[in-house]
Image (cartoon, rainbow, N blue to C red; front, top):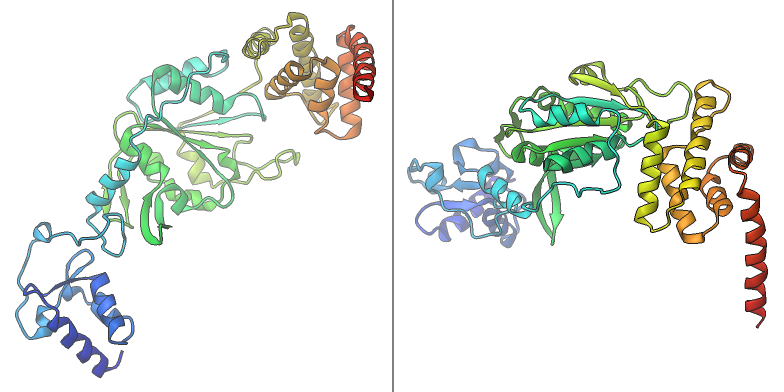
Length: 396
């Protein structure tokens, strides 16, 4: 900015001074714009002029002596407290964000959930006052994330779930600036919110993340975190913990089954106290799960439930032996239960829910089920009769 422009801006500010010499960043920018001068970076970059965060004392530029005013005594600008332009003190920003997120974050209890695997031990960890980060790995659809949520629901503990992807960065996790109603505001991220509330932070699909997750290093040690964007130091509230779920152990996927899984930094992985390998439920437990899912949709068929879990168990054993490349997850059994409740047809339910696999695998799964469930052919005959009935009704 030219000297003449600086002088003009100083004179204009002086003419609008209310006797304190104090101006906000927005007021200075507005005045500079009104007289047609550029962005006054020379003011904002001068630490001697800064009175409080976002407020500048121009008295010395007017030829007077700058009064030493304590930051707490400076009145906040009459702007919405979330606006970055007015830059309220960090504690004001925090209070505003907390006022937005006062809702109860305890997960809803799933009456159909059947505890198994690491459930009991996870409950002990989250019941304690210890900060003890846990990494849970396992194949898709075996209830890893649901288990964490249901432990929190059982303990009435708040939980914040963050789905991790390759795009997840520090702004997504810690917080950053965004636009709201045309104003730039600071939004606190889920990690700091969980720390303040003493909640359980669930990093879902953490092995889909990148080296940008390294911003969590200090937090994974249970230490206070200094937010460089607001100047606030956040100390974890009692009960705060981190549970990460993933399909791999952070080493990538050698078989290509999870092509989006990335190799995570060793220093990041080392900060998790324990790693849990979550397996699919046992045959008896999975049958309980399937029956409860059937009860929820008012379509209980114990014989079908038995056949489904037997079928999935045979497929998984074959998968573990390396004879096939796909398997049936507990989640897929639930999809079949829901499809059966809607269509009332076992064959159709199974076919629709295994169509995600290639043609050979799909047919192999269907053929295997027909050997497990001798009633399947009867269902096919019923379907033919139903189709004939629908055709007749349509022609009428």
